Image (tube, rainbow, N blue to C red; front, side, top):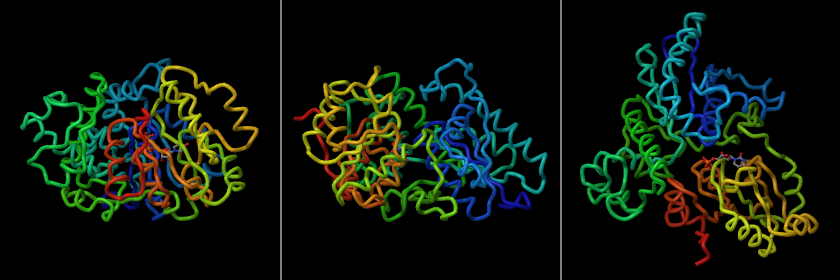
Length: 408
Ligand code: UDP
């Protein structure tokens, strides 16, 4: 880092929970080495971050949090990440350029010399490079998923998928025969079956692919031993994980890095449970369930007879309010067998001695967190790379079991 007298990095995540959290952790790690970090996100996400942090956290951090508009009218719903993505395509490059120019003009000792941008919005690296600033891409998924994305042109060439990412054969395929054998065995092509969603995910993959090739370095929340064969495939890859709060200098480790306020009452509830007894149930920030699935899950947890801590986001039910089976809340509440929270301090929960297993959707962050804390998984993947992560967990690392959500 050579441009400014004091090193200064700008970090720019894709504005969704599973992308913002690991980049904040990385930023905190960088900041502990005395490097200034300007963390830029959309106004909407910035507001959420600030409101989820305690005053203590705000005072402790040596990261400058700043925001740019997402380009959507104020009244628009920001829960739809893809709408935000579409808008950012037209606006983020310009806003980021202006911000960097402004920072660099106002303080010649602390010029931004490097931008770390999420690969999903990797086109901003083009804008950044025009300013003479180094571009680094950050991928919050597994390297194996990334490697598959980088092979998209080959898959198209072989006719396995068409130009829109639609599979030409069956719904989920193993990869091309021309790819390294381990990829064929380990990775599945698992875009959603909804055509609109698939189109957007495929577009994200193409952007990821370009950014991964363009960036000087490609940072990934993994470590070499976890995915050595995948890491060997990508020359500019730096496996900088696992990104865990507990890996960050203790001065910063208490900081919240969620977009939602964590309900810490579950920690004292966990204190009262026997060692290795509790089923921790959490499905990340956007997976949704049908009412039937929620009913079955609730009754299954109750019937297991085990204490359970269940993260039930208000938007966990597909298109409606979350409802529990008749009398469920009263029964599990009275017996004290179940604890339900809107959002948990997940890493702290996973470290707790009373946790016995993690019923998870297998999002990459949850996967890395759970395996780093040595917690066995029960896998209930929702979509995309979560299916691949499940395969890693159950078949490669052998630290978890699949559950069949349809009960077959
Ligand atoms: N998380 C949390 N509290 C919760 C549920 C999740 O702090 O109650 C965090 C979790 O620790 C992880 C992130 O939210 O860092 C979810 O990321 P992941 O990649 O697992 O799933 P996504 O939300 O992207 O589907």
